Image (cartoon, rainbow over all chains, first blue to last red):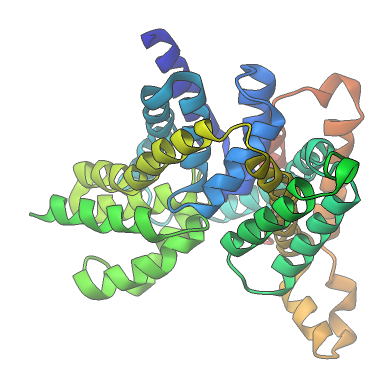
Length: 184
Length: 199
């Protein structure tokens, strides 16, 4: 039990330590560590957790990993995952705050991060292709994908609205679909 | 009792900010006005550091503010405070979901949510691509009808690196399965050698 909690804690800490930028930059790392490495969740589950985490308050990465931890070991697992996700930040930021206040203005650091951003773009692209297979399974899904991608680029709307609208659409199209139409 | 106040302020952020790290920003502006713990210009520095270090931006901000206000105990208390509401909600949501796991409506909802979620990720990815591959100044000039920035519009160094990374991560067998962090490290080194930020 303790050993497994420790594993959840360490895996979450790894995701926290290896993710640069916002919540979406976490996905390639989660796919690698949790889905392919530990095989604790499937791609779909990660996507469901990520969607839920986006519409609930709090930190998206911490909440996504919290769901993962809860699936493994219940309440204790969720707490272990949450604490793991924040540990690297606490250590790194505290060190930076103590030693290097002008850290972000150093040219070498800026150049390094301009390079890292390119890599993050490629990694996100690869993640999307992986997630695509299990989530955009028919034409209706493709329409939802396109509509959400375009609207969220053009309009300044909170992701919460998109997730709620998509859930309602999903229920209408899938649960109430006539006969075989609801299945596929 | 500054620690209690710090905990409460970040607990509130954790409870009411929806939509990721940037969603904590308005709360921090509000906090700087109400408490006087830090100035508004300090928030910009905090954001820069949070974005250029690993870890979720929201947690990084909480740690940084917590440290500024109350040293190392402060950084711990702020970070824990911001995650507690989410943790409590997870326990409630999973309980509800377990009950309705095989419900056709829950099933239908996720059928719709999954492609929407990928759509949101794609949009976020496109926004990162925009600032990575295009020169912002030239891009704005172009929108204003000024064509002089056209040759410098595309950051060709970034495009070449992206193409190489794409081949290495998707098609080139020996490197395909490597951990993403290896590619991140290589990109950082290349960014420094070829001064990607122009700095």
